[in-house]
Image (cartoon, rainbow, N blue to C red; front, side, top):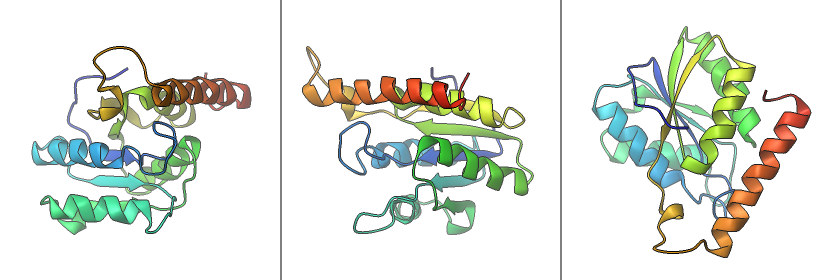
Length: 171
């Protein structure tokens, strides 16, 4: 579901959560790396990191520091720190974007997560244009066959898609 990145008002990154690895923070580094790359290339002047997850440290703050460590100025970064699901990532982040007058965003997340994230975004906030951008993910790095971890990740995503549809959060 990825598209060619286009200039946008913001570059939004949803944290890794637990879907792809069954462990917290399974993909945030790859997502931050892709967001920094897009920022450096001038695709969006603002980064928004969304995660309410806290293990030892708040995940959104860890992502922010990682971006700063890779050259993104702190004033170019905003945090959304309440979300505990993809639905909440969308609702809380798009509310921030709307308040700031931003009308378009690049959405960076892992390939397996893009479909649900974009469908949720387009259902909940069709007034803010979203372009899906996949982060390169080690989750898919296999020479042959799927691992049990990958199968669990895909099953989680299909179950989540069904639940989101049932709740009316996606169409």
